[in-house]
Amino acid sequence: GAVVSQHPSRVICKSGTSVKIECRSLDFQATTMFWYRQFPKQSLMLMATSNEGSKATYEQGVEKDKFLINHASLTLSTLTVTSAHPEDSSFYICSAGQLLQETQYFGPGTRLLVL
Amino acid sequence: AQSVTQLGSHVSVSEGALVLLRCNYSSSVPPYLFWYVQYPNQGLQLLLKYTSAATLVKGINGFEAEFKKSETSFHLTKPSAHMSDAAEYFCAVSNFGNEKLTFGTGTRLTIIP
Image (cartoon, rainbow over all chains, first blue to last red; front, side):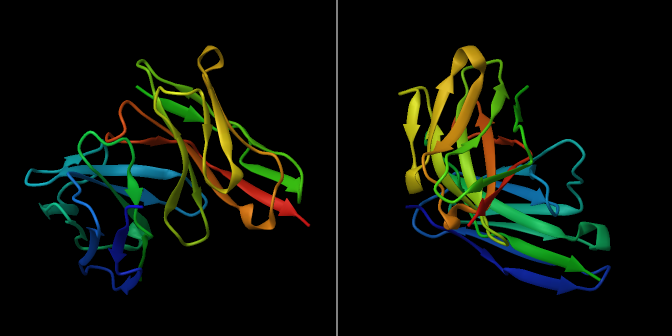
């Protein structure tokens, strides 16, 4: 099956710094990638949808200047949390899908802790 | 707008017993429906999906789900629970497979030895 990786798996950073999370589709070309956020014991909330070569579409309430998304190639999307604060601590999960395909494939997630 | 309701945030069943996790959806267009499983500190793994073909869908690990349009339901079942089934289960809906998913709040399944 299709494999999606995320790097890093865990990151701890100081308040005010920026953190970049990578999402890669390893064995297929992902025309669309999604970024989700999951708080402890809660469901996944979609943050944004990114299509290769175009600007990401953010969900209502998600600050696009704080959560920068780049989808420069068909196998890589990055999420940068700028000027991170403790309330940004969460589990970030990406998924990837192919044009006209039915299924999204999820990465293993990145746990971010901002001190 | 779409939404998913998962009844029961926690379900406990004995090993070997029937597993039933409930999911009801709301969608203004014919839905695509998914069940995902999440183990601690991991991403989501697709169990099965409904994409307007057969209403009874079989997935991995012995799970299956039945799409019932009249009841707007997509309940997940497994005849005999295993200890390895203990995890968090999410039901999700989309308009089309490669569009954004709307997730339910999840059901934590505990298996009693």
